[in-house]
Amino acid sequence: MGRTDNRAETYDGDADIIMLGVGTSGEDLSLQLLDAGLDVVGIEAALVGGTCPYYGCLPSKMMVRSANLLKETDRINGMSGQASASSDWNQVAERVRQLTGGWDDAGGVERFEKRGGRLIHGEGKLTGPRTVSVNGQSFKARKGIVIATGTKPVIPPISGLEQVSYWTTDDVIRLDSLPESIVFLGGGATSCELGQVLARFGVRVTIVEPGDRVLRLEEPEASEKVEKAFADDDITVHKGAKAREVELRGGSIVSKLDGGIELASERLVLATGRKTDLKNLGLESVGLDSSARFIEVDERMRAAEGIWAMGDVTGKAMLTHVALYQSAIIVADILGKEHPPAEYHAIPRVTFTDPEVGAVGFTEGAAREAGLDVVAVTKEIAATFRGILHGSNGGIIKLVADRKTGVLVGATTVGTRGGEILGLLTLAVHARIPITKLRSMIYAFPTFTGGIGEALGAYGRGVTTVLDPGYTGLKELDQLVETLED
Image (cartoon, rainbow, N blue to C red; front, side, top):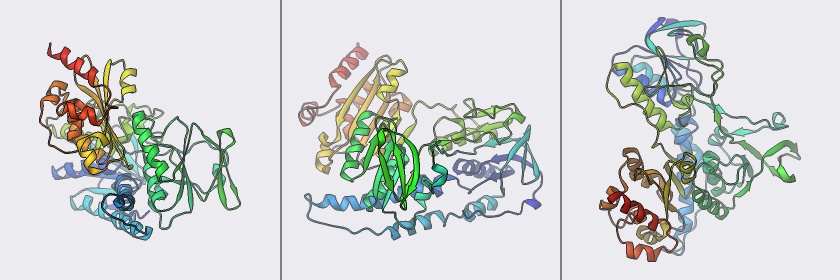
């Protein structure tokens, strides 16, 4: 980790704002406040910019793009000719190194200090109201403190784990050369994305998921489509099994699963989630619970007098775009500007597998568990007009509507450009646009977004039902619309 040192001994002990954690959202908030003329001290224990630009969103999606290009070459066959491609991981690794600056945050530190901020690398700790200590120094905030210290990987209690050289997903991002085989413990978004990337570069990949399906927080139909794609990529998935023990055997790491299954691999990756680490932040000095999982905040992201929190530590969603959304709210609150209060009913999320999974709001199951009476519509993207033309071989659009209010409360898109199609649906859920209004708008034809209109029964109803005999939920949606119009 190429952390850049700072001249902390020259810093004055007071500031308008102390930023405890200068990850993506912490940097964003700090730069905005610096531009507004405030004096900001940023304290960061790791890299300025946080997980996203160095180990998360950005490098992983660069890797996904490279892997998907290889797969696209295969898809030429039978559609427009014959093609083949050879892979070169060195090119991918070099692009990732350039993107991350070799995992050195000198650029982030320079941005911060050029705007007039003071940046200190170290473990900051609250020591009282508006007071933070770091590296033996004490700083006092005139306006307040913002906490955005993020999360760290969960290390599960597996027997023998301390005896093997295991990886987290951070290590996968830094790969210079590829192992022959790898086992991912956990079937969430990150392991699914990275596992598919490595498989397309020739690594023998196995994913172990303790639940009944990968991506178990998404719609079951989404999991089904992704698992089918994994089979096509020769990825082995063990579902309903946990690793109970690991050991070194003959140069391999052997993972022992429930049911007596043993998996031998060159590398083992723990992708079992992330957690906050609040116990060493000194929260008790400002009346907050340091033993809690998350820091409780109100709709203005206030945790206590003169204390704001944002990002993963708030427990709303461990997503960069949620943290940046919260950053804008805090900036407005500090500067005394108007901003709508925080609301989280329409959080979009994308898993960048192939097919891509985009989702917003409730799944059908989660909506029912929340006590909502819903109608669910499911349409195959391969049976939409653009899906047929594109040659889509999988994917769905699933819409979840509340019978009481007549608005969408959730939606999922699985397939080509699933995350991009999600934009219209996120707007619909966020703005609570009535189903009747969504049905009455004109959709560009033939587009993937137009498939939403087809799923809603907005146009081409006679033809679309012929193209997709498995189309479900249209009758129930029609009944809902009739009820709303009465």
